[in-house]
Length: 419
Image (cartoon, rainbow, N blue to C red):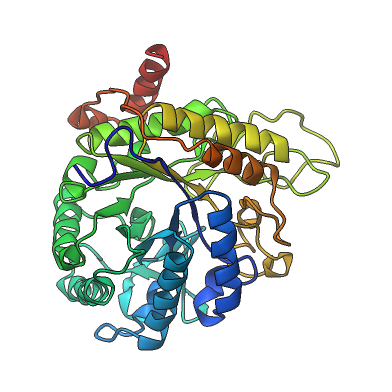
């Protein structure tokens, strides 16, 4: 058992972090004072864990070179977390983020066409996608170089809680075979072992919706922690954007598929509607998902938002119901997506130019003011929640990946019936 993961241990409430002024440009526009201030505010809310995203092309601009300037900035981020009593979970390869694949040029394959999500490298959009990160030995050696360097550099750091191998890495490229993903995970975990902290990986709802070349049981075999990302508003199989049970179900299913490991639900939340608008539909339909069912509350209205979203109180109700269910069913912790809404001045830049809902996921607004969800999370944290005994929920992985859409629907119906 990983230390601090037994029932009765403190529940790890946390947040995913990007700064509101710069978003994914953070590492090229790093503001030490602003990050220190944000850490102080995160700690004041009673949160304990911050998931950080060193952008891959910033920290490893060349296949065989790790950038010392960029690493010094991440060093500062870890130091600031420690100074405010926070734990940090850095993501090793970012990678996919908010609807864009941000990749170093050396990781691209000219023979691989761009996929569902745009590829941006060196500040411009590229027509091609990533090479085979899992089985191409040249790319794997480069990843191992970074993993070893970070394990050595941050070994013993007081803020380092765990490493996350990647953020929704199947969105960057799907493995050709589950065995490729499993070996990739094992080799990276071995490279990170000298750091002496748990390793996990950013699996997400779509990894259960169809066969993406990943089997949770094998990719997670060397992980100490299970993780999952999920949003009712992105899940076309859910009962709609207010379906808080969908989040806890994804956690229960992934925990079962990963052998009952302690689970951190490392992304949950939702986009808030722009001021004066209301949601036009129940779901945000992502690239490649198909039209789905919009379930529009009304087909007309000048006050309809341009995307599915939540009112401020509605979002707080949904997000807290999901959190309380995760806590009650035995999760080790949960990380809200994300810290802050972004500055509207970023609206015409990637990723927001094509995914405007990503601007308004924060528990703070774009000026730094605490929103209703932030206030409720603070109240939850002040209750000093502890880890509960996990709810038992069994799934058969072989049967699941024989027909993922059917298995998911049937498992969700059973999960609800067993309440």
